[in-house]
Length: 377
Ligand code: NAD
Image (tube, rainbow, N blue to C red; front, top):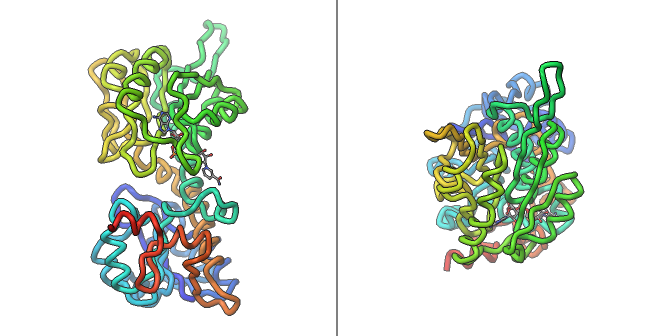
């Protein structure tokens, strides 16, 4: 196979889908790797590093026309999608469910599209392929660092000759993969940390990191597949009221709450932002064009209110640690490539396999993923 690594097109994206280390591993396993010139520069992987790993540096046209597997972080532009041809495999975060029509278009072109958001994450064989987990973990870590950087006081308690400084109080709302990593990082920086989630199962995970779990009456929010369910309007209101007091007494609030297939739940309404102490930092990992967990958060922007409260729209924090994030992303891509090759090293996507029936948006002209099929009907 020929694996092509494309340069990302989004202005905020610093990651690359395959790093030089995975390049070397793919070549060792018999693949040829084509890297679009400059693809790794923003994540501090030089063209020379890819060359040393055995890759051939090419322009975009050649990467697109000669690759049998095209690896990307984000779904490429329409122009790039149109250039793909029958039999090629596109792997990345393709946003299949958000834009199902693009997948239909790829199916018509007989391109196989593997979209990481569709991966069935609870199957153990899929864990090495789980981009959502690897990137959420990076984002959670970085969230605590960004918060500590913006926060105008110390995170740890400091006992000095000039007096004692109290530790920062950090509250993490939504304690999945990103939230737990944010908790661990804030703890290591010396903050006093608490966490909150609607899935009761997360209580033990929060407490095992040495943080306090906040109990709310809205704590029966487990949905299917380990995810949260969407709350009703009444539950959301109750949750906002119950969290208001906790938010007001904390210094840093990191929010990560997501519900698959829904817009992110608003956990911090405008009144709670308004009542926060001056210097409070909100980091909203759910900030998106659809809204986020914090009222007024703007994707990719930091808003400072007239009460000196900072609201960070942390829409793509994994990209702010691009070297490590890409290293992990590349390992996830490699795991997918390994799993889709037959014994002779040829591409053989089995749409009935329990991992590939989920991960595969389209192959051989057919829409494979059941949720995507539903979205298209
Ligand atoms: P996510 O990104 O979908 O959401 C982040 C967190 O927000 C979740 O913990 C969710 O419960 C929480 N949340 C949603 N709505 C909320 C609300 N209104 N109030 C408070 N919290 C709310 O979740 P994720 O990080 O992808 O992880 C979801 C689950 O999947 C976790 O249990 C995780 O451990 C599990 N998981 C399992 C595997 C595996 O088995 N291999 C892999 C990855 C994740």
